[in-house]
Structures are given as structure tokens and as C-alpha cells.
Image 1 (spheres, helix red, strand yellow):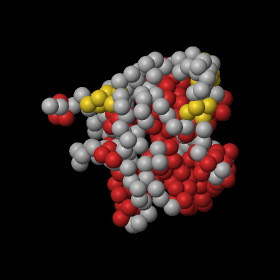
Image 2: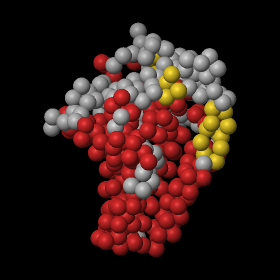
Image 3: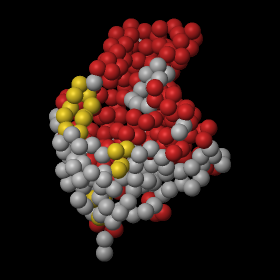
Image 4: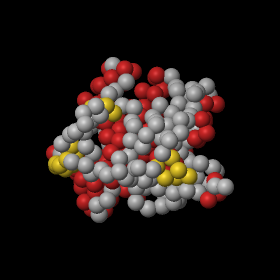
Length: 306
């Protein structure tokens, strides 16, 4: 990208397009979805706890967060930071949809609008994590922002014409049902509560919370000149977030498949991509040293100066 706010999928031809003017409105669908998961987790979780149910929760969380959301949806579908067979991409995007946050089209739309807005000198607080924790939680998980003058989102052909992705988007919440049935047959209500409700509640809330922290607190090595919202690296959360906590790095090199820079920045998503590469299932992998550099990128790490 050549300017602070260029996003390939964003078409902002109208001079009225504005990332600041908009209204936050309650979304009955989003609110009902996450509220039902919270209710199932808060009631069913304690009542049905068992060792095998917790193990199911842990394993399915890692799969949907790492292979699904971080690698499949974020690094591959959104940023095209590596290439892989179509069947593998679709399998990972399916796992990402199972995380319970969004489908393939809605995740692209939310991500691109947010990144486009954050690269402007000013943007709506919905994009900027400026509000208090409770208000931001309600906004992001129960509401949608309706910009008065929104830009158009252009989906590239390989995504726009993908019938599997269209089906996933339409049925994104229903994708939990067949797995819930399988879990019930194998482990009863305990597996349903922990494999569906607790997992979705923890993963979706964790996804929001890391984004909130990573736009407010932490360490920065890089600054995007002209961007009203900067990303921060949040230490200590690499393993839990599959590497997504290294957000200052990601703002600096958004198309890099590697989010953690160096062995001290734990990045399980990068480990998975490297493993896929060794198996011949990933190639054209983008790294910080070989991606196009944003002309507005400024190093503020004294180790890189002079």
C-alpha cells in the first residue's frame, strides 16, 4: 500500500466517504447469538463440567482459533499472505467460521472497513477501541456501525464466486448444529456445553478483548504516519492468541504471514504455516522483509536507527 489508508478491497470514489460519521445500532441477530452462547456457557458449563469436556473445549478452541481464524481467515483469506491448495483454504475458513464470530464475507467486510478507517487521521470510536471496556464489548459483540457515507467493498473473484463461501456465510450460525449433534451422541450435554457454548463464548470474547487491548496498550516498534489508530504488541499473550497479539507488527506489515518477529514473540499461527510449507501445502509465504512497505511506516525502535 502506498498511503496510510489505502486498502485494496475498499473503493472510496465518492468524496463524501467518511470513516467518522455513523450510528451504532443494536443488532438483534448478533446479540441473540452471543447471548445464547453466554447463557449456555454460564449455566451448562459449571453444571456439566468434566475432564473430557474441558479437553474437547481446549482442542476445538485451538483448531478454530489457530487453523481457522488466525491462519485460514486472517492470514490467508483476508491478507493473502501465503498460497495453499483451495481445499485447504476452504477447510481452514470453515474452521474459522466455526469459531463463531463471522462468516467469510462478513469477516472480510468488518476487517477491511476497520483497517481502512483506522488508517485515517480520525475515525469513529467503533473502529478505534476508545470507549470503556463494557461499552466497547457491547458495541462490537451486540451492535453494528452504520456509516453515513460508507465506502464500497470489492470482493475479488475467487472469493465472490465461491459457492462454498456463500453457503458458509448464509449458514454461519447453523454450522454449530451438526457438531452439537455429534458431541451430544459421544459425550452428552457436557460435550455440547463445552464444545459449543463455552468454546464460542471464550473464543469470540477473547477475539474482541485482544483487539481492544492491542489498540490501546503495549509496546510499539513502528508508527504509521497519518493513521489515527495505532497497533500495539501485547506481550505474554502470543500462545493464547495464536500470535494475533503482535498487532503493532501487523499494522506495520499487514500482508506478512508472520506476526511475531523473532523467537521471543510466540506465534503459533506462523508455526502452522511453516509446517504446511514443509509438507508442500503452503508457498509464496510473505514475510516482513519481502512485502511492499507502506510509505508512511516509521521505525520508532532505537535499535533500527542510526
